[in-house]
Image 1 (cartoon, rainbow, N blue to C red):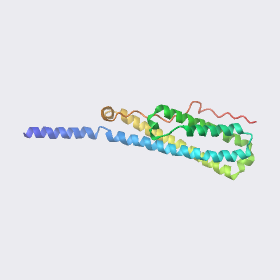
Image 2: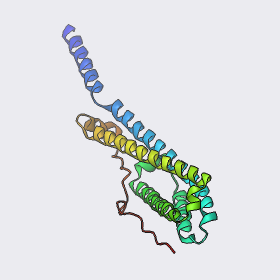
Image 3: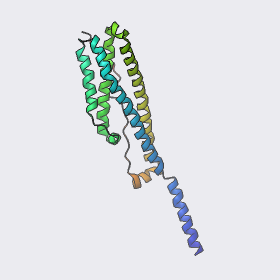
Image 4: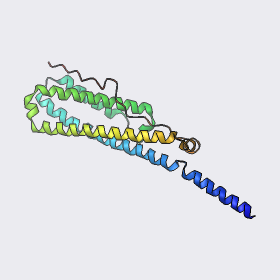
Amino acid sequence: MQTRRFLLLGAVAGVALLLSSCGYNLMQANEEGVNRGWGDLEAQLQRRADLIPNLVATVKGYAAHERETLQAVVDARARVGSIQVTSDIVNDPEKLRAYAAAQGELSQALSRLLVVTENYPSLKADQSFLDLQNQLEGTENRISVARQRYNAAVERFNYSIRAFPNSITNGILLHLQPKQYFAAQPGATEAPKVQFN
């Protein structure tokens, strides 16, 4: 009887030890880190989208004949806005790629717009334009930092579900799938092409 109790106590202690190092809580925490990182990134992308109408309206007053560039910015912002974004986007690689592609198009259109403004010295001196440009530049920096933090969270999460013994726990209990990185779009390293009329 005493031996049986000792074996049962030993088995319970062994199971407790195994469960304490199985990674279950770590994987849950890392997944929440990915979700938080995505929320931070999404907030900065929304901030940029909110600044664009004011920037376009300010430039439009000075550069009426740059309609093509202005329209490209408006269209790119509309494409970004047309994609239904929910917190589940981090679990859907296709939706995340489409969203990242739309954001990349918007970044390129904004770059072309800012290059076009170089032709308008009075616009470059306009205080409202300068304020908007500074806000947009600050937002672009925040987006870059948020992307890096999101990708770091994805890396931690993906590693945690693949590492031993977490991989066993994940395979048996959680069935978590790797998350997608927010990657640069093809051609992102090329400078935007701008033609002056």
